[in-house]
Length: 151
Image (cartoon, rainbow, N blue to C red; front, side, top):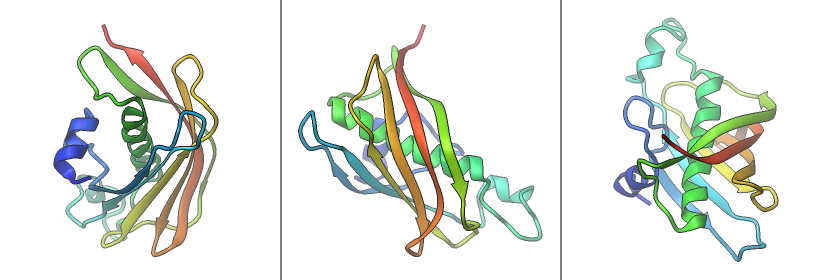
């Protein structure tokens, strides 16, 4: 899935769009686990590097989690066969067991691996999420997203 298709599946835009490409998506049947592999290219031109940290640019951990949540949002919309619209969104509503194992810096390619845990209940989806750089785990967490109507 290229950037044009990603833009159809996420309401985010620059500078907060944190998924550059989807490499693979597995939807399976209703009872099977669903998964996505996407990535974000981390460049020195990222606006957050101006202040985090000017002498040693490091991608903030909260943005790694947001990138994983955006990949989860794409996966959820694809699993539902729907696109975001002005009346509903997937909100990032929870994070458990977050661990940061390796700094992510300019020049890295952050690979986002997200898979569903169980079936969605009352619009709440749970995911196992891992971010990797060069095959090494940079961060991992269990995420929760919820589809909600927007007023």
